[in-house]
Image 1 (cartoon, rainbow, N blue to C red):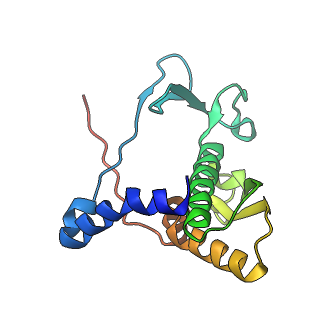
Image 2: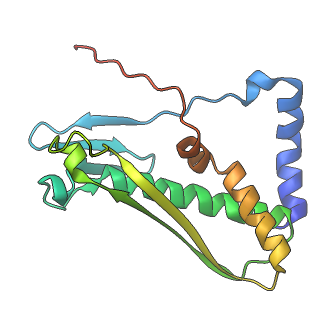
Length: 169
């Protein structure tokens, strides 16, 4: 897709959202079923069922997906798509590229072993390796706008309002 096609695709949406801001608010949903045989959860991905379970550092077998890995994978996917869209809009040709995310977890927090150990990632690092002839100034703008418009990156960067409810069937 080139910049003209991208703008043509997005222009009517942008106009609609300017005229009716509420039309831009969409509730995304995820659903999973608790596995009745294992400490696992079957998550519907839209394409398949992903079986998530305990990480080996918390006693898992490693056969199931770790939700921490899935979070990093979501970040990589979102950042990669955003980078490509921004590069297209800025008319930066990316011949090829790789997106990586890594994060540091202290499983003492998750297992309740040490109260001073955080539950969750202490740090997450996102990196892009791209093959391009674009000047550094354009690449700096590309990174800045990718960070700004990546939904997952910004969700992690600016804590959203969270709530949890437990109901009985």
